[in-house]
Length: 241
Length: 60
Image 1 (cartoon, rainbow over the protein chains, first blue to last red):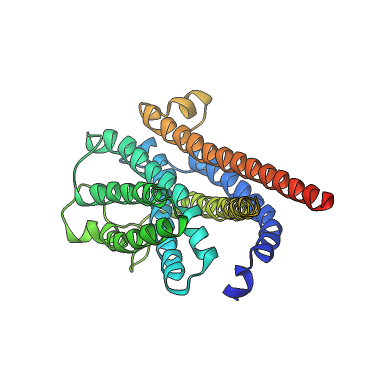
Image 2: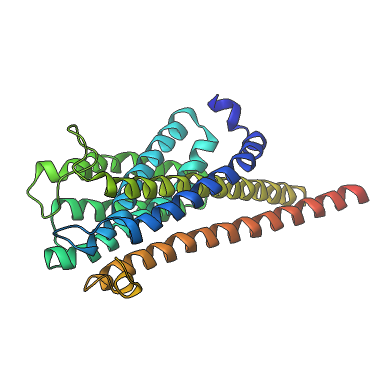
């Protein structure tokens, strides 16, 4: 299955067919999610309206971890099986993951000021997410630091795999250490502690962010495949001259 | 929330809530614009190279 769609022409054909559906789903989820998040969901009895930041902050933080995990899996597949499309997927994911991580950090800061009385604290959760952001930036910088693209891809794939140790640290940081950040209130064994009126917009926004990722990933992969073809043709032209 | 004023101001918390949504919109839409612009540029580049190669092979 994976090898079947690894063919760039086949992948592009499938991608063009799937993209409109992802885009439509994303628009519907964003419209419904934003309406509920901003206008219809209840105000928190302690946090007041600042609880509305949760509908951006939490899905962004989930996506920051999801994108890094997707990048690590793609990098491993590219390294072990020399799967060209997996390498392209890792490269295409990095800026999207970096954007979600930046968004989680900034919205966390905007939520922290009225609730904790500070924009930032160097506690385990916040610091490990900042490290995740630097891992994304490091991956993108390292990838482009080599003249030969293959060497850049290998070096950056190793960086992603080493950096993956940070993902469980982020997830369990609120359990392992005393932090200002609250513990998990949605993804927990005993079930969510949030009221369904708040869970619905949260899940809709999470679905919107997920669909945004998959749609943009396909667009960026198509661009990367075209760029690879441009490089190959330029090489052929240069060799013929 | 029953009136427009409270929706916009969100009492004293609007100063934190609205920037969160505005930054999210700018970031996510900006990334889409950059990605689509890069896709269009690369597609044009590819078409130009393929057209030039086709022309070359037709001449020879």
